[in-house]
Length: 432
Image (cartoon, rainbow, N blue to C red; front, side, top):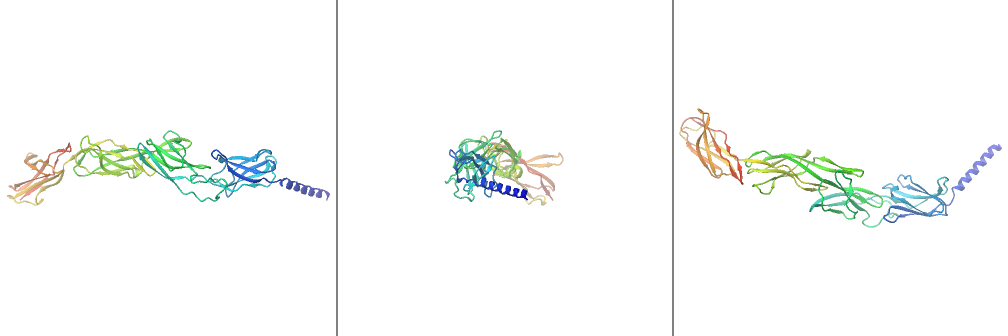
């Protein structure tokens, strides 16, 4: 009985000691403020009676980070916590209690007001436009999300509380800043050529976020046009466009990747006369896989080359490239040819008329030829004057039978370049 009573008294004595040890006066007036010189840390201050203190960070509806700092007795009641110790986009309090690393906490905790660690609003909607030898990049920023701790002690007031650091990445190089951080919403880069990637680092007192990317793309283009074309009949310019774009991250050099998107503008250029400047003949755009197929109107013989023009569209800037020039020779086109009345049989002794019309409307001399069945050769029958692209001959169908004629149209010159002539198909004449 005495042994049980002694144990009970011991338990009561221990409980009484623990309560006494944990009831030391708690710190008071815990406050937070920004450290000077660019807000690199949060300054914590408090009041106490010269006791050792323990400092922690407590999450409010956020996970508490594993930060602990012990302040010896007699040291100033002030401590700076680097901003890197605070997780982004959360709500926190600073907790100060009396205690040591060996003896533990010996007072009730005191807490600072709640504050948030919201990072900057990510820039978005970047656009690029050519300006001289460089580019002008503009960006927009979305409306900041709701602040659930309005007017907390670490809120930074003012309309422009975040800055934008312009970064450029090139193949084989690290992404690097090209100027100081700015509060503006545009950046002029006076001289730059693709390939590159432009990126903004939005910064505020807590963290940085990347956004507002602009891609500076290089292009290569292949192209094929037919070697000959009938006058006025469109040809097809076909080929493929391949773009090279830069991809970067913070810890390794930038790399180049290939892209073949749809919608890349393509222009077919031509020289109307020798030594003339190159002018657009047709326009189109790539389809899926980077391929294009463009109808090109034709007239005289001339060279063509296919280009990707300099294009600024949204958040991308595409540099120009051209295929090798290819020469397409024009060929006279038969608009119509045959005997009046079509292929109906003509009575012998009647007059028949054969005619031809061509494009372009040439003034020249054409040759009517007849097929000789004995020699199996085409024989010249009559030279005909052609005016404004038309020639005709009326003659008497003297003998019955089946005959075949054709008209030979010679080549010529147009816009200072040669144009091939043409021969009509065989023109059938049946005389009964």
